[in-house]
Length: 195
Image (cartoon, rainbow, N blue to C red; front, side, top):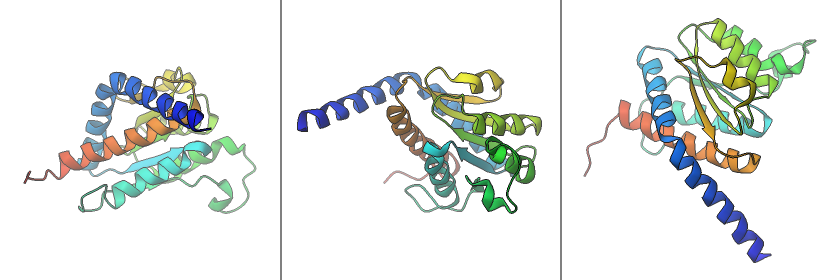
């Protein structure tokens, strides 16, 4: 059993090393895009597929509250995962619940941060489509080959694609990427003097 545990740790570390080789420029671009959106008075709208919804909520919370150092609140919201929470029971396909919220709550200039595993999940693909029709920029955290979501992204959008096919490794890397983004955003908007 302990050898199996060590193997899991080793796989996770190797996946993080691989991500560390390919993601720095994407993370830098994403941090810059988020900072510009916030400076322009816009908000960050976060959503994720069921296995990543907690990450979307976590990121919105990090922006509204703070990452490691207290600072002023930044405007961010996580979309609700359950369409029933939006009022009457929806007759539409459940994959549209994020898209409907984007159409209802987001404004032109806001930024959509979507988190998925392979980029083919209909809920985040439809959310990205809705955002793009409102001239919003999209930051997509995904893995594998990027799927359908990759094809939607334009030159002003940012793809942070984890070089892995394993959902568990992708989700672990997403959490690390969100923490990295949070630190970059805080360091840019609220630089601290080193002591």
